[in-house]
Length: 425
Ligand code: HEM
Image 1 (cartoon, rainbow, N blue to C red):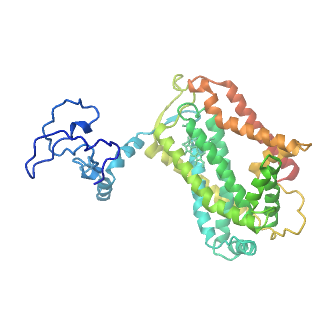
Image 2 (tube, rainbow, N blue to C red):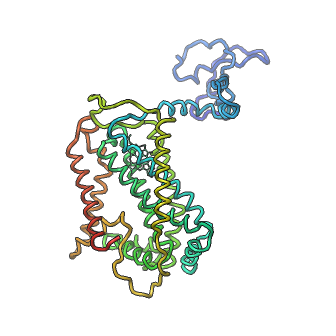
Image 3 (tube, rainbow, N blue to C red):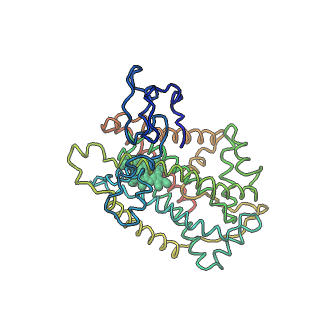
């Protein structure tokens, strides 16, 4: 049994109860070990079952260890309850969660859809890993092998590529819908912050994954993408770390691969745990003023009603990803050759188009640095919105922030569309 290290005084100044007869129940806690006990208090009469204060007893050794042992569940349920009785109150709490029903409830499904596509990424990614070889000489041929030889390899690869795009799309929709519903307001600030980091990590997934096929397009797009930080102070060093040298090379492939399959998944799982735990603890918010105006039509129990509705969304999402994978397969391209000149029209993935266009618009002396500074400041302001928007935190409408959100959305959409007009899909 472990000693209690919380209370250094424990056991040092024992009160003096009368010596107990051998085999008698242990005496009650020494007075000095109990923080609130008055110094001169008389020793209590020994209580049956009480542990001497300062000695830790795991729940399983305490009397009434499992208050759930008589609850009416199946054999497996009661077996688990007996072992996990400590976490049962958490499950009871989670079971109470309710989701408000109103005319904007539709937007609540996009976080769950992001989660669904992330789960698809984990499963298909693990399958691809069985055949993919992350070296400069083998990456492209193993990629072609998966696409052409491995049974259903083409499907797994196509689903992985499409699901990545859908996941990021869902996250953008989720972010803007929670923004315009002001779901980030007190006490959900950390849901916004953890979500923001999750989106950044997801973009990192997209960026690092793009190089893995080791085809010409991926190679030169990474060359352009990793060049960007160079203009910022200390940027050249960062570029070298990212590339594993001065230029994009097989070293870069090793780095992108390890980020893609080890570091980023680990970080995402950590952040996702925090994000989803907060969803459960804080519950789902309703838009400002809806409760007072009587616009809430009722509440759905999260378990099982809302989860079942989420499940319908996931089935539709699954149908969509299979449809896209079969009908609009991504190409294979040609193997990357660093010695050939870059093909014309190199552009990044669509979710980086807005920044890409911004850099193109600032093509004057020192302009790229200005663009990077503007974009970074905008990103920090976006991250800190819950802490600036004091009105929303007081449950009052905050039109200035709505306008800010509309401007950010317009910037992303207009710039993305401009790249589409110039380069096509
Ligand atoms: C991998 C990425 C993410 C996953 C899997 C995810 C998942 C979820 C889920 C399942 C919910 C509860 C249902 C809902 O309201 O949609 C939720 C709520 C929320 N998420 Fe995310 N999310 C992610 C990224 C983000 C991002 C990028 C943001 C914003 C920057 C964000 C901000 C929020 C907020 C503020 C809520 C609370 C909504 C409310 O209480 O009404 N999340 N998220």
